[in-house]
Image (cartoon, rainbow, N blue to C red; front, side, top):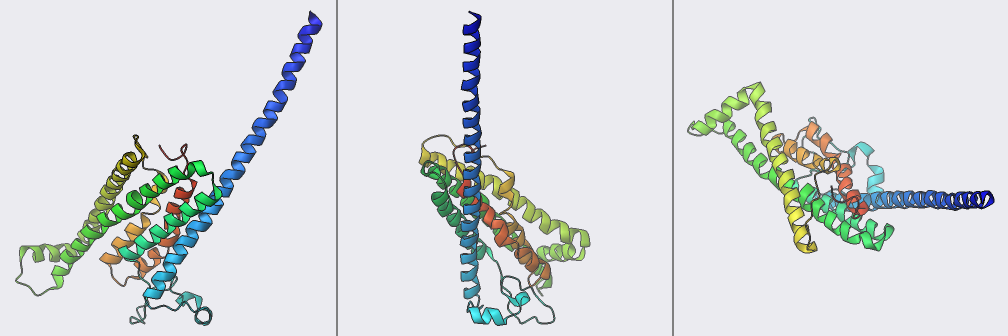
Length: 276
């Protein structure tokens, strides 16, 4: 009886060892797959943004000729150039809402392609749903919410400079522009409130669309990574509030990098990590 118990114990130990090894191998394989997907989608997202930036630069009159780029100092390349008050007539690449939209779409498209290439086919549906969340919830709707109120506020500010009939609106504009505290607070409140409203609205709209097309309730909550693409909204607000501002130009240079996050999140999406 004792011998039989020993045999059973040894057998149990032997059965446990392969399972542990198998579990370890599965974890390593899963980790390697995740790394491949992350790196692959980061590359394709960056490529999507870079393509959009190249098209924007060409449309704004910058040369894409390799020899011309080689002859130009790096600080004067379209992507790095900022406003120089000593040379006010020189071109500087601007990221308005149309340009930001095209970079965001380029990023998400790149991420979607990367996800399809580097990840499992069964995860592609989740990636398409995440693409809707990114384009609507993190780019299009928040951008629209920021752009319109900010442009309207800029028009209100401009009233202070116009020789009109001294209306109440013009008086209010002059008062705000003449007060250092209100001059900073008012546009910050307008842009901040618009952005917060746009993020919430975008998330709800994109969830409803995904719910409609998938046929089941979808609740993809707002995540920390969703805020990276909103640098474009901040940049847009700064650009609209302070045209030809070196500070706005410097902030805008980080927008293409921030927008690659949208593509990476799209490419890495799967049923386990997409919701919540």
